[in-house]
Image 1 (spheres, rainbow, N blue to C red):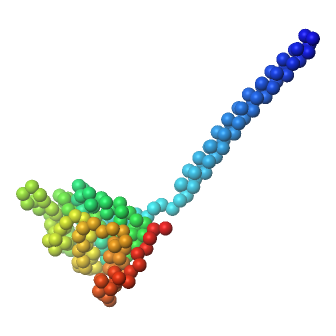
Image 2: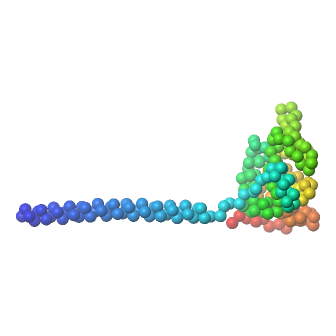
Image 3: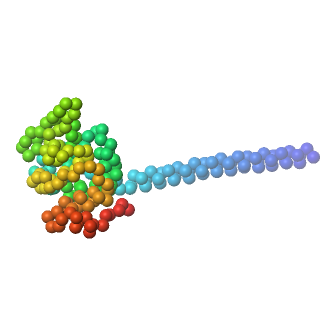
Length: 205
């Protein structure tokens, strides 16, 4: 009787030991599975194509680029404390299609209207000018022909002459029309109203 009880007890211990081993294996398998999924996610993230971004230049950088290869120029005029400027950055300029198109057909310049730096443009010197409590850069005033507001976008031709100055926030669908109108020289062939009525906005995929 005693011997049979010992065998029974030993079998119970073995069964309990198998249960513990099984639980350990399950935990180890779960950890390995999670690690595999995590590795696959990280690998997929690293191999995804980077989101296109506009290459913003300074006026000094623009001069060097224009000497190498003349292009049309898009000038974004902004200030650091302009909320509508930030909104247009996020909702318009950061759209992939806008970034790709601008990088292909334009040089893009970001001009802070509050910069204190002297800027040489087309051989002329422009400085920050203060009037009472407020000030603005002379080049921003020049490019917008005195109608400066924030944000403003100015389109220049291949010789840095102003094609058009456009003030105020412009949403993504509308800005598509504007940038392609000047980018593909439609402004030389048809009035803006005709182009705008015929244009089909592209949507992000």
